[in-house]
Length: 451
Image (cartoon, rainbow, N blue to C red):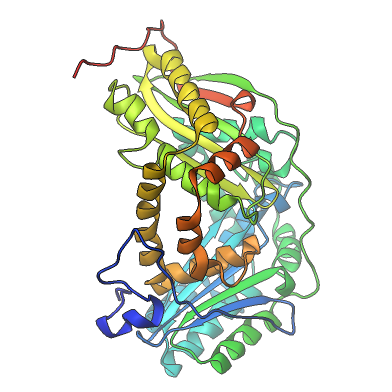
Protein backbone atom coordinates (compact mmCIF):
# COMPACT_ATOMS: atom_id res chain seq x y z
CA UNK A 1 0.00 0.00 0.00
CA UNK A 2 1.33 3.43 -0.93
CA UNK A 3 1.80 5.65 2.08
CA UNK A 4 0.88 9.19 1.04
CA UNK A 5 -0.98 12.01 2.70
CA UNK A 6 -4.63 12.16 1.78
CA UNK A 7 -6.05 15.65 1.15
CA UNK A 8 -7.78 15.82 4.54
CA UNK A 9 -4.57 14.78 6.33
CA UNK A 10 -2.50 17.75 5.29
CA UNK A 11 -3.15 19.84 8.34
CA UNK A 12 -2.28 17.04 10.77
CA UNK A 13 1.38 17.18 9.92
CA UNK A 14 2.19 20.33 7.92
CA UNK A 15 1.01 23.85 8.50
CA UNK A 16 1.21 24.46 4.77
CA UNK A 17 1.86 21.86 2.12
CA UNK A 18 -0.08 23.40 -0.74
CA UNK A 19 0.84 26.87 -1.86
CA UNK A 20 4.06 26.51 0.11
CA UNK A 21 6.22 29.62 0.09
CA UNK A 22 9.74 28.22 0.30
CA UNK A 23 11.32 31.60 1.04
CA UNK A 24 9.48 31.65 4.37
CA UNK A 25 10.16 29.37 7.34
CA UNK A 26 7.94 26.28 7.14
CA UNK A 27 6.73 24.55 10.27
CA UNK A 28 6.31 20.81 10.56
CA UNK A 29 3.66 19.81 13.06
CA UNK A 30 4.83 16.51 14.52
CA UNK A 31 3.58 15.85 18.00
CA UNK A 32 6.22 13.44 19.26
CA UNK A 33 5.44 11.54 22.44
CA UNK A 34 8.53 10.10 24.10
CA UNK A 35 9.18 7.99 27.17
CA UNK A 36 11.47 5.32 28.61
CA UNK A 37 9.69 2.07 29.40
CA UNK A 38 10.21 -0.17 32.43
CA UNK A 39 12.95 -2.19 30.67
CA UNK A 40 14.97 0.89 29.74
CA UNK A 41 14.02 1.07 26.07
CA UNK A 42 13.63 4.64 24.81
CA UNK A 43 10.46 5.23 22.80
CA UNK A 44 9.28 7.89 20.38
CA UNK A 45 5.73 7.75 19.03
CA UNK A 46 3.67 9.78 16.55
CA UNK A 47 -0.06 9.08 16.41
CA UNK A 48 -1.34 9.27 12.83
CA UNK A 49 -4.78 7.95 11.89
CA UNK A 50 -4.94 8.86 8.20
CA UNK A 51 -4.01 5.35 7.06
CA UNK A 52 -4.75 2.02 8.79
CA UNK A 53 -1.03 1.26 9.04
CA UNK A 54 1.62 0.98 11.76
CA UNK A 55 5.36 1.34 11.26
CA UNK A 56 7.69 0.09 13.97
CA UNK A 57 11.45 0.61 13.91
CA UNK A 58 13.92 -0.87 16.40
CA UNK A 59 17.42 0.60 16.53
CA UNK A 60 19.91 -1.34 18.61
CA UNK A 61 23.37 -0.05 19.38
CA UNK A 62 24.57 -3.31 17.84
CA UNK A 63 26.54 -2.24 14.78
CA UNK A 64 29.95 -3.32 13.64
CA UNK A 65 31.66 -1.05 16.17
CA UNK A 66 30.56 -3.54 18.84
CA UNK A 67 32.10 -6.67 17.30
CA UNK A 68 35.82 -5.94 17.23
CA UNK A 69 36.76 -9.44 18.48
CA UNK A 70 35.11 -11.17 15.51
CA UNK A 71 34.62 -8.82 12.54
CA UNK A 72 31.32 -9.91 11.08
CA UNK A 73 29.61 -10.89 14.33
CA UNK A 74 27.16 -7.97 14.32
CA UNK A 75 26.11 -8.60 10.72
CA UNK A 76 25.83 -12.37 11.16
CA UNK A 77 23.74 -11.96 14.32
CA UNK A 78 21.33 -9.58 12.62
CA UNK A 79 20.98 -11.57 9.41
CA UNK A 80 20.43 -14.83 11.31
CA UNK A 81 17.49 -13.50 13.33
CA UNK A 82 14.96 -14.64 10.73
CA UNK A 83 16.63 -18.01 10.09
CA UNK A 84 14.48 -19.51 12.83
CA UNK A 85 12.91 -18.16 16.02
CA UNK A 86 10.76 -19.51 18.86
CA UNK A 87 10.71 -22.92 17.18
CA UNK A 88 9.51 -21.59 13.82
CA UNK A 89 11.70 -22.17 10.77
CA UNK A 90 12.72 -19.38 8.42
CA UNK A 91 10.14 -20.49 5.83
CA UNK A 92 7.39 -20.74 8.45
CA UNK A 93 8.16 -17.24 9.68
CA UNK A 94 8.18 -15.81 6.15
CA UNK A 95 4.93 -17.56 5.20
CA UNK A 96 3.17 -16.37 8.34
CA UNK A 97 4.35 -12.80 7.83
CA UNK A 98 3.24 -12.87 4.21
CA UNK A 99 -0.19 -14.21 5.18
CA UNK A 100 -0.62 -11.13 7.38
CA UNK A 101 0.50 -8.77 4.62
CA UNK A 102 3.26 -7.44 6.90
CA UNK A 103 6.70 -6.33 5.75
CA UNK A 104 9.94 -6.92 7.66
CA UNK A 105 13.34 -5.38 6.88
CA UNK A 106 16.75 -5.29 8.58
CA UNK A 107 20.03 -3.48 8.05
CA UNK A 108 23.41 -3.19 9.73
CA UNK A 109 25.57 -0.08 9.98
CA UNK A 110 28.77 0.99 11.71
CA UNK A 111 27.08 2.08 14.92
CA UNK A 112 23.70 0.35 14.96
CA UNK A 113 21.47 -2.38 13.58
CA UNK A 114 17.88 -1.67 12.53
CA UNK A 115 14.78 -3.85 12.25
CA UNK A 116 11.50 -2.56 10.88
CA UNK A 117 7.94 -3.86 10.70
CA UNK A 118 5.10 -2.44 8.63
CA UNK A 119 1.64 -3.86 9.23
CA UNK A 120 -2.03 -3.04 9.10
CA UNK A 121 -3.38 -1.56 12.32
CA UNK A 122 -6.45 -3.81 12.54
CA UNK A 123 -6.11 -5.77 15.79
CA UNK A 124 -6.57 -9.16 14.09
CA UNK A 125 -3.49 -8.38 11.95
CA UNK A 126 -1.46 -6.12 14.24
CA UNK A 127 -1.37 -8.43 17.27
CA UNK A 128 -0.06 -11.55 15.46
CA UNK A 129 2.38 -9.41 13.43
CA UNK A 130 3.83 -7.88 16.60
CA UNK A 131 4.01 -11.35 18.18
CA UNK A 132 5.99 -12.67 15.20
CA UNK A 133 8.25 -9.60 15.24
CA UNK A 134 8.86 -10.08 18.97
CA UNK A 135 9.77 -13.74 18.50
CA UNK A 136 12.17 -12.88 15.72
CA UNK A 137 13.96 -10.13 17.64
CA UNK A 138 13.91 -11.61 21.13
CA UNK A 139 13.84 -15.41 20.69
CA UNK A 140 16.11 -16.39 17.78
CA UNK A 141 17.08 -20.06 17.56
CA UNK A 142 20.29 -19.46 15.56
CA UNK A 143 20.24 -22.85 13.82
CA UNK A 144 23.62 -24.08 12.59
CA UNK A 145 22.37 -24.56 9.03
CA UNK A 146 21.15 -20.98 8.93
CA UNK A 147 24.51 -19.67 10.11
CA UNK A 148 26.38 -21.52 7.36
CA UNK A 149 23.94 -20.22 4.74
CA UNK A 150 24.27 -16.60 5.90
CA UNK A 151 28.07 -16.94 6.13
CA UNK A 152 28.17 -17.93 2.47
CA UNK A 153 25.91 -15.01 1.55
CA UNK A 154 28.04 -12.53 3.49
CA UNK A 155 31.26 -13.79 1.92
CA UNK A 156 29.68 -13.50 -1.52
CA UNK A 157 28.56 -9.97 -0.76
CA UNK A 158 32.06 -9.04 0.40
CA UNK A 159 33.56 -10.41 -2.81
CA UNK A 160 31.10 -8.43 -4.93
CA UNK A 161 31.69 -5.20 -3.03
CA UNK A 162 35.46 -5.52 -3.32
CA UNK A 163 35.07 -5.27 -7.11
CA UNK A 164 33.34 -1.90 -6.84
CA UNK A 165 35.79 1.03 -7.17
CA UNK A 166 33.40 3.32 -5.28
CA UNK A 167 33.10 0.90 -2.34
CA UNK A 168 36.87 0.35 -2.27
CA UNK A 169 37.56 4.09 -2.26
CA UNK A 170 35.13 4.74 0.59
CA UNK A 171 36.45 1.80 2.63
CA UNK A 172 40.02 3.04 2.22
CA UNK A 173 39.00 6.47 3.47
CA UNK A 174 37.55 4.99 6.65
CA UNK A 175 40.53 2.70 7.21
CA UNK A 176 42.97 5.59 6.94
CA UNK A 177 41.07 8.30 8.80
CA UNK A 178 39.95 6.01 11.64
CA UNK A 179 42.93 3.65 11.91
CA UNK A 180 42.87 1.89 15.28
CA UNK A 181 39.29 3.00 15.99
CA UNK A 182 36.11 0.86 15.68
CA UNK A 183 35.09 3.11 12.76
CA UNK A 184 38.16 1.86 10.88
CA UNK A 185 36.55 -1.41 9.66
CA UNK A 186 33.80 -0.11 7.35
CA UNK A 187 33.11 -3.47 5.68
CA UNK A 188 31.96 -4.78 9.06
CA UNK A 189 33.47 -8.20 8.52
CA UNK A 190 36.55 -10.15 7.52
CA UNK A 191 36.92 -13.60 6.01
CA UNK A 192 38.76 -14.78 9.13
CA UNK A 193 36.14 -13.33 11.44
CA UNK A 194 33.26 -14.87 9.52
CA UNK A 195 34.93 -18.28 9.48
CA UNK A 196 35.56 -18.25 13.24
CA UNK A 197 32.04 -17.31 14.38
CA UNK A 198 29.83 -20.03 15.89
CA UNK A 199 26.20 -20.16 16.94
CA UNK A 200 27.38 -19.71 20.55
CA UNK A 201 28.99 -16.42 19.51
CA UNK A 202 25.70 -15.28 17.96
CA UNK A 203 23.80 -16.14 21.13
CA UNK A 204 26.31 -14.33 23.32
CA UNK A 205 26.26 -11.19 21.14
CA UNK A 206 22.47 -11.23 20.97
CA UNK A 207 22.23 -11.62 24.75
CA UNK A 208 24.13 -8.37 25.19
CA UNK A 209 23.67 -6.06 22.21
CA UNK A 210 19.95 -6.82 21.81
CA UNK A 211 19.14 -5.81 25.37
CA UNK A 212 16.13 -3.61 25.95
CA UNK A 213 18.13 -0.74 27.40
CA UNK A 214 20.35 -0.79 24.29
CA UNK A 215 17.30 0.01 22.17
CA UNK A 216 15.50 2.97 20.59
CA UNK A 217 11.90 2.23 19.50
CA UNK A 218 10.01 4.37 16.99
CA UNK A 219 6.32 3.96 16.21
CA UNK A 220 4.25 5.91 13.70
CA UNK A 221 0.70 5.17 12.70
CA UNK A 222 -2.86 4.31 13.54
CA UNK A 223 -2.38 3.68 17.27
CA UNK A 224 -3.40 5.23 20.54
CA UNK A 225 -0.81 6.00 23.21
CA UNK A 226 -2.16 3.02 25.16
CA UNK A 227 -1.66 0.75 22.14
CA UNK A 228 1.86 2.07 21.61
CA UNK A 229 2.79 1.45 25.25
CA UNK A 230 1.40 -2.07 25.05
CA UNK A 231 3.45 -2.86 21.93
CA UNK A 232 6.68 -1.41 23.28
CA UNK A 233 6.29 -3.23 26.58
CA UNK A 234 5.66 -6.51 24.76
CA UNK A 235 8.80 -6.05 22.69
CA UNK A 236 11.15 -4.75 25.37
CA UNK A 237 10.16 -7.20 28.12
CA UNK A 238 10.85 -10.15 25.81
CA UNK A 239 14.40 -8.95 25.11
CA UNK A 240 17.55 -9.60 27.14
CA UNK A 241 17.90 -7.13 29.99
CA UNK A 242 20.54 -5.04 31.66
CA UNK A 243 23.35 -4.55 29.12
CA UNK A 244 24.35 -1.29 27.49
CA UNK A 245 26.96 -0.77 24.80
CA UNK A 246 30.18 0.89 25.88
CA UNK A 247 30.70 4.43 24.67
CA UNK A 248 33.02 4.68 21.71
CA UNK A 249 36.53 6.08 22.22
CA UNK A 250 37.50 9.50 20.86
CA UNK A 251 38.61 9.67 17.26
CA UNK A 252 42.32 9.21 16.55
CA UNK A 253 44.39 12.21 15.53
CA UNK A 254 43.93 12.41 11.77
CA UNK A 255 46.84 12.34 9.35
CA UNK A 256 46.59 13.45 5.72
CA UNK A 257 47.55 11.09 2.93
CA UNK A 258 47.22 10.09 -0.70
CA UNK A 259 46.41 6.50 -1.68
CA UNK A 260 46.10 4.90 -5.09
CA UNK A 261 44.60 1.43 -5.57
CA UNK A 262 45.37 -0.08 -8.95
CA UNK A 263 42.31 -1.61 -10.60
CA UNK A 264 41.62 -2.25 -14.30
CA UNK A 265 39.14 0.01 -16.04
CA UNK A 266 38.73 3.10 -18.16
CA UNK A 267 38.48 5.62 -15.32
CA UNK A 268 39.25 6.26 -11.67
CA UNK A 269 36.82 6.67 -8.81
CA UNK A 270 38.09 9.47 -6.60
CA UNK A 271 37.42 10.36 -2.99
CA UNK A 272 38.57 13.33 -0.96
CA UNK A 273 37.61 13.18 2.71
CA UNK A 274 38.04 15.44 5.71
CA UNK A 275 37.58 14.32 9.32
CA UNK A 276 35.02 16.12 11.49
CA UNK A 277 35.41 16.17 15.25
CA UNK A 278 31.87 17.48 15.69
CA UNK A 279 29.47 14.70 16.85
CA UNK A 280 26.08 13.94 15.33
CA UNK A 281 24.08 15.80 17.98
CA UNK A 282 26.10 19.03 17.86
CA UNK A 283 24.07 22.16 16.95
CA UNK A 284 26.55 23.13 14.21
CA UNK A 285 25.60 20.01 12.23
CA UNK A 286 22.74 22.05 10.77
CA UNK A 287 25.23 24.64 9.45
CA UNK A 288 27.24 21.85 7.83
CA UNK A 289 24.12 20.30 6.28
CA UNK A 290 23.40 23.60 4.52
CA UNK A 291 27.04 24.00 3.50
CA UNK A 292 27.15 20.52 2.01
CA UNK A 293 24.03 21.26 -0.01
CA UNK A 294 25.70 24.32 -1.56
CA UNK A 295 29.02 22.64 -2.20
CA UNK A 296 28.10 19.24 -3.55
CA UNK A 297 24.40 18.54 -4.02
CA UNK A 298 22.68 18.89 -7.37
CA UNK A 299 23.50 20.27 -10.80
CA UNK A 300 24.06 23.81 -9.52
CA UNK A 301 26.48 22.91 -6.72
CA UNK A 302 29.90 24.47 -6.75
CA UNK A 303 31.63 21.15 -7.37
CA UNK A 304 29.31 20.25 -10.24
CA UNK A 305 29.87 23.66 -11.81
CA UNK A 306 33.65 23.38 -11.52
CA UNK A 307 34.08 19.84 -12.83
CA UNK A 308 31.12 19.08 -15.06
CA UNK A 309 29.57 22.28 -16.29
CA UNK A 310 32.77 24.19 -16.95
CA UNK A 311 35.22 21.45 -17.97
CA UNK A 312 33.24 18.29 -18.67
CA UNK A 313 35.58 16.20 -16.50
CA UNK A 314 32.91 14.02 -14.94
CA UNK A 315 29.28 13.08 -15.28
CA UNK A 316 28.62 13.37 -11.56
CA UNK A 317 30.35 14.69 -8.48
CA UNK A 318 28.79 15.04 -5.05
CA UNK A 319 29.69 15.59 -1.44
CA UNK A 320 28.20 14.05 1.68
CA UNK A 321 28.31 14.41 5.45
CA UNK A 322 28.49 11.30 7.59
CA UNK A 323 27.93 12.44 11.18
CA UNK A 324 28.70 9.77 13.79
CA UNK A 325 28.37 9.59 17.55
CA UNK A 326 31.93 10.74 18.25
CA UNK A 327 32.73 12.67 15.10
CA UNK A 328 32.43 11.79 11.45
CA UNK A 329 33.66 12.81 8.06
CA UNK A 330 32.92 14.95 5.03
CA UNK A 331 33.61 13.31 1.67
CA UNK A 332 33.60 14.30 -1.99
CA UNK A 333 33.40 11.51 -4.57
CA UNK A 334 33.58 11.57 -8.36
CA UNK A 335 34.68 9.53 -11.38
CA UNK A 336 37.17 10.83 -13.91
CA UNK A 337 39.26 9.66 -16.86
CA UNK A 338 42.57 8.17 -15.69
CA UNK A 339 44.64 10.95 -17.31
CA UNK A 340 42.85 13.64 -15.23
CA UNK A 341 43.24 12.09 -11.77
CA UNK A 342 45.78 14.61 -10.50
CA UNK A 343 44.29 17.64 -12.21
CA UNK A 344 40.75 16.93 -11.06
CA UNK A 345 41.97 16.30 -7.53
CA UNK A 346 43.69 19.65 -7.40
CA UNK A 347 40.57 21.35 -8.75
CA UNK A 348 38.39 19.70 -6.11
CA UNK A 349 40.87 20.63 -3.35
CA UNK A 350 40.88 24.24 -4.49
CA UNK A 351 37.08 24.40 -4.77
CA UNK A 352 36.65 22.98 -1.26
CA UNK A 353 39.35 25.24 0.18
CA UNK A 354 37.81 28.35 -1.38
CA UNK A 355 34.42 27.38 0.00
CA UNK A 356 35.80 26.87 3.51
CA UNK A 357 37.51 30.26 3.39
CA UNK A 358 34.67 32.24 1.80
CA UNK A 359 31.51 30.37 2.78
CA UNK A 360 28.29 30.45 0.75
CA UNK A 361 26.50 33.46 -0.60
CA UNK A 362 23.04 34.44 0.62
CA UNK A 363 21.58 33.31 -2.73
CA UNK A 364 23.26 29.92 -2.43
CA UNK A 365 21.88 29.47 1.09
CA UNK A 366 18.36 30.29 -0.07
CA UNK A 367 18.64 27.77 -2.91
CA UNK A 368 20.02 25.14 -0.51
CA UNK A 369 17.18 25.74 1.92
CA UNK A 370 14.69 25.21 -0.89
CA UNK A 371 16.43 22.00 -1.93
CA UNK A 372 16.28 20.64 1.62
CA UNK A 373 12.69 21.68 2.29
CA UNK A 374 11.02 19.44 -0.29
CA UNK A 375 12.64 16.15 0.78
CA UNK A 376 12.02 16.86 4.45
CA UNK A 377 8.33 17.56 3.86
CA UNK A 378 8.03 14.36 1.82
CA UNK A 379 9.76 12.38 4.57
CA UNK A 380 7.44 13.56 7.33
CA UNK A 381 4.43 12.97 5.06
CA UNK A 382 5.22 9.24 4.78
CA UNK A 383 4.92 7.18 7.93
CA UNK A 384 7.69 4.73 7.09
CA UNK A 385 10.19 7.51 6.50
CA UNK A 386 8.95 9.37 9.54
CA UNK A 387 9.56 6.30 11.70
CA UNK A 388 13.10 6.15 10.29
CA UNK A 389 13.61 9.82 11.16
CA UNK A 390 12.46 9.18 14.72
CA UNK A 391 14.90 6.29 15.00
CA UNK A 392 17.73 8.48 13.77
CA UNK A 393 16.77 11.21 16.22
CA UNK A 394 16.78 8.73 19.06
CA UNK A 395 20.12 7.22 18.18
CA UNK A 396 21.74 10.63 17.73
CA UNK A 397 20.08 11.87 20.94
CA UNK A 398 18.39 14.77 19.19
CA UNK A 399 15.61 16.64 21.03
CA UNK A 400 11.92 15.95 20.45
CA UNK A 401 11.44 19.33 18.73
CA UNK A 402 14.18 18.61 16.17
CA UNK A 403 11.75 18.00 13.29
CA UNK A 404 9.31 20.76 14.14
CA UNK A 405 12.09 23.38 14.28
CA UNK A 406 14.31 21.96 11.53
CA UNK A 407 13.26 24.14 8.61
CA UNK A 408 12.95 27.43 10.54
CA UNK A 409 16.41 26.87 12.02
CA UNK A 410 17.81 26.24 8.54
CA UNK A 411 16.15 29.40 7.22
CA UNK A 412 17.61 31.47 10.06
CA UNK A 413 21.23 30.58 9.35
CA UNK A 414 23.38 33.29 7.78
CA UNK A 415 26.31 32.93 5.35
CA UNK A 416 28.64 34.07 8.13
CA UNK A 417 27.41 31.35 10.53
CA UNK A 418 27.82 28.66 7.90
CA UNK A 419 31.30 29.90 6.98
CA UNK A 420 32.33 29.93 10.65
CA UNK A 421 31.14 26.35 11.08
CA UNK A 422 33.12 25.27 8.02
CA UNK A 423 36.29 26.92 9.27
CA UNK A 424 35.88 25.49 12.77
CA UNK A 425 35.29 21.90 11.64
CA UNK A 426 36.98 21.28 8.27
CA UNK A 427 40.65 21.59 7.37
CA UNK A 428 41.73 20.83 3.80
CA UNK A 429 45.23 20.13 5.06
CA UNK A 430 43.91 17.05 6.90
CA UNK A 431 42.40 15.48 3.77
CA UNK A 432 42.80 11.87 2.75
CA UNK A 433 42.68 11.42 -1.02
CA UNK A 434 41.99 8.05 -2.65
CA UNK A 435 41.92 6.97 -6.28
CA UNK A 436 40.84 3.52 -7.49
CA UNK A 437 41.48 2.62 -11.11
CA UNK A 438 44.25 2.35 -13.70
CA UNK A 439 47.40 4.45 -13.52
CA UNK A 440 48.04 6.68 -16.52
CA UNK A 441 50.19 9.54 -17.75
CA UNK A 442 48.64 12.71 -16.40
CA UNK A 443 47.29 15.64 -18.38
CA UNK A 444 46.55 19.23 -17.33
CA UNK A 445 42.99 20.42 -16.96
CA UNK A 446 41.17 21.03 -20.23
CA UNK A 447 40.51 24.73 -20.77
CA UNK A 448 37.19 26.29 -19.87
CA UNK A 449 35.30 26.81 -23.15
CA UNK A 450 34.77 30.40 -24.17
CA UNK A 451 31.19 31.58 -23.82
